[in-house]
Length: 242
Image (cartoon, rainbow, N blue to C red; front, side, top):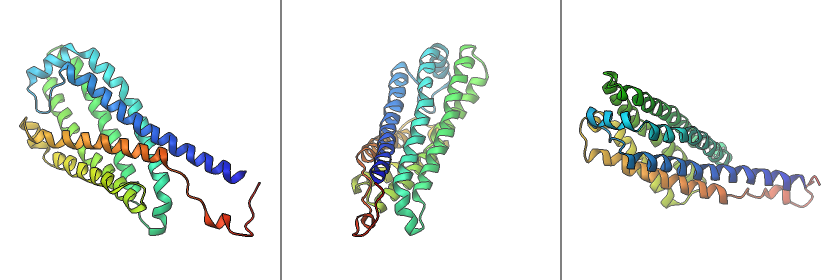
């Protein structure tokens, strides 16, 4: 009975963190669905466009921003679930790819908190046509683009760990690593992305869309994950607490 209860608890945590991954993906997509049709300026947009949006769409920004604390909580919960599932495979090999991935998730939470704070600040400065708006917008674009570095860390760490443990399928790992390359490339080219609106922005966009697919697939994997049976516990003569 004790073993069954312990396995059930482990299954429950894995399922919860998998659902958290799906919730995170839904939340960040919903925030973009709210902001993009309202006219959120693209990276590198001119100050006139920025003032027009943030000066008149403060309510939209507030609603989308209200979703982000839940997103950060869900992302952290997903990361904890992935690390829990992967660490037992990594300890025997003295590896820590999953911890690298969790660090990336934590850093992207912090960086995106700064992005959201900057957007909220812009709703005040743009409304007053404040001279600070230009500086805040450049800061926003820099943080937003550089955040690709931390997303890449999360993708690389959890993809490599998942592949080596046999937890995720090769196509899933390929999606994650490809997304990491695109997001890291976009982050590396941050000055160009900010100064030149155009094709370079597609690097980050495609990488982000692949990141969402990767998160959803990882969430489904964690939901389906079952705790492996311990062969030693089933061996003849092994005492089992009842």
